[in-house]
Length: 265
Image (cartoon, rainbow, N blue to C red; front, side, top):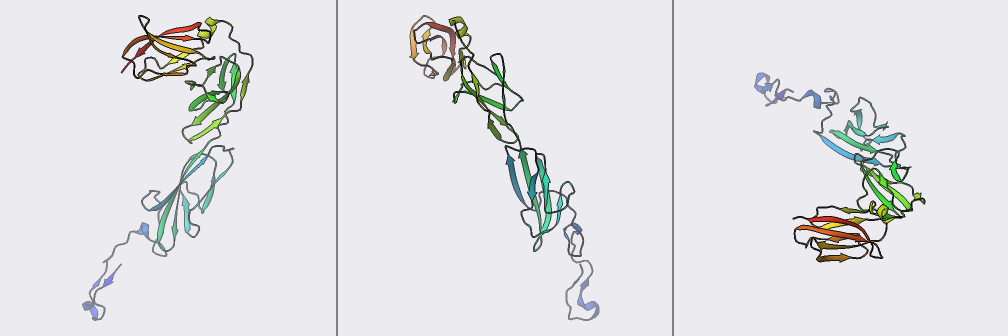
């Protein structure tokens, strides 16, 4: 733009400067040039996080934060203040709003339909498709350590699994799968279904068993260190570092399992 410094003086004395002000074309409009969308978050913008954990595959509507604007352009070249999307992703919309604001709206869309369904193969439970995380439940209670994609059942009851999808942040719970045909008839068979973890440990150890069990920890020489009835977890943080024995017994004090237990720092 040109500029006249002293407009009251005639002729060259007015101080006319032909190119006194430079305005970038990409920022002009209203007759001075059309904006060129660059889709960078370098101007006023609003971010929307949209999550649908039970998406059925239908259209998801996206719409500009301000409906009073003009020149709506999406990052994929579509025009208009609104559009429908059918997949997760990041979408941008650039437009002008009064009086002279160039806006960018960002839509972060995460859509998932987890709908876990439990399957069975013998006595191993699984799901019809893969997920990022799993937690198995029996009769509404967490099964400690049961976070794998499959779980081998050791007793009858109502099983469910909670799964998650990290990309969308969604979780979902399966319908109940009722197990009625599991029976453990011998102590040797029962021993195979008892898990003691983590081992080695420096704090809490968990005992996963299909029946109520008691536990006692002794030194290698047989000195009793600790005894827990109805044992599901044991705190060994106060125990001196070293190697011990842990005995798992039933309510009749019959030994079901003996395992070395290592206490670490």
